Image 1 (cartoon, helix red, strand yellow):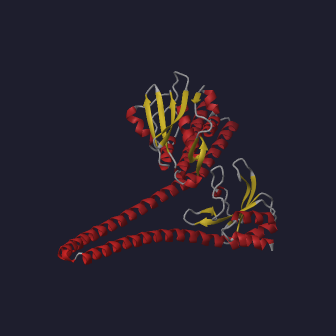
Image 2 (cartoon, one colour):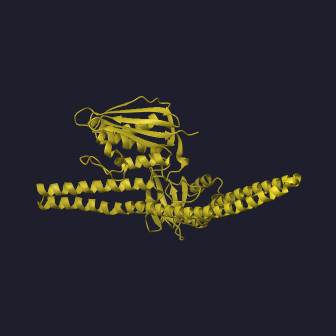
Length: 440
């Protein structure tokens, strides 16, 4: 009876997460998530009301790649990125997947889970379709309401005009001429409105086509970067085996070592490029739901901790005078990405002739909070500073990199309604100003 009550609650949008935990406890686990197949992306996505991503930024689909009934058995970083929670992913006969988190389910409990998924997954799929349909219906209703209000306004104008005519009969002839003129103007306006409507329809078609192209491009980048991971890992493994074979047979010499080093360097750069492509594909996918008040000092300290090895190795001095209570309204992950890329670049492009110094400051202006990151590094040719924000654009080829970091920074801040500016002088250093839009 308790299991039936849990199933009833799972099919309702209300308290679905609580019902999932109760069902999981019935199956000797801590939590339950049900996934349905997204036919467009060809990946498993959590059903409505379930956690849509892992806390470390990874997608659930990264773990649901098997083809058997038990498609995954291992650990996942859930509910926090530091966690290592046991997970069992069981495929039902309709292709949907149930994931038990925590515990160690028996064969009987796995069979029960399959039956639960068979019952709940179709309802989740239908719920997803209904939500999409309701969104479209709401949009059309808003358009219809606006049209109705406009029609009522025009009716009121016409009624007032007829009242004036009735009360001022001596002006009837003049009014008639005015009405004729008004009718002609209305015809012209109607023709103009028709042209505007046609233009809007064409613009909507163009926007929809651009949206489709952008979605196709994002899907292509994501799929390509994901599908390239396995081959490059295979190449890396084969290289390791090859080097061991050469050592055993005594065929390794200085030339072979050099070639192997070059190949391994190319593999590492290829892997970096794949990671960067994945990050580019993710730009803009974070919604405003992930925005909130973020401690700027905490984010800076996190980034400095991540780069601690480089800071110590190169003797970098980092100065900032930002009070701990200063917060920004922003997506925390995106803010950390901005800070990491800019500080890491300041270290990469340091001058060999002086100690690297990085200064970080914040000021409030009309409409923006301006974060400035200034260094005393190599600097940038003023004629080329706009090129640094292009995808895969690099000005200093002697430094390792893919030319994606500043592109990501620019896209993130522009998607949030802000902007980025750079001032630089070769041999003196660079100053990047990031404008965060004030939130009401």
